[in-house]
Amino acid sequence: MSDGYEILSVDELGAYASPNHGDSRLMPLRRRLGLRAFGANCWTAEVGKRVVPEHEEDSGNEELYAVVRGRATFTVDGQAVDAPAGTLLYVLPGELRTAIAEEPNTVVLAVGATVGEPFVSHGWDDVVVAFNMAQAGEVDAGRAIMQTTAENGWEGSYNLACFEARFGDLDAAFDSLRRVVDAAPDVVAPYLEHDSDLDRLREDPRWQELTR
Image (cartoon, rainbow, N blue to C red; front, top):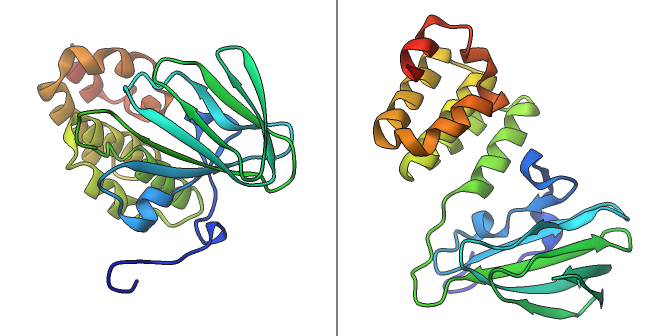
């Protein structure tokens, strides 16, 4: 990186699967550049699959989508939009949106922020990268990322607990989960009931104590 700018290709970003995003594969631009003023990531998918996950952006973010390569069909509140490379599509928060990849190697850039609020990264894209690294055998590298995201409120500690429950140290998983329960018991309760990432913890006697 030079003083004040950096040049890179989307192909340098890699593509990471996420259970929370269906067939869409994250290309973690925000993480790669360390963006702090706004959110920005690229997405890709196989032909016929969702390149932009279906969502309403209930965070309050305005979003601008740019088709960097290939072609996509967007659907915004039921209206279909053909989007070849070079298309820019602006979508307000609350509008249901998604996009299907129509050509191989389609890449869509999504940029978003909330009017009047400083941008805060909750690290969900870091979590996607860390879990993919662990699944590829790079558990220590993934853990290092997760330990950094654990500094970002209860969500970070919760995700670290999920990581350790799946890939590593159950003692560390319970330690992180206790911090979450102490900080946000009502918010985290539904996750504790249904999250499959925590399945390895449920047979441990400490689970009953923690969830009592």
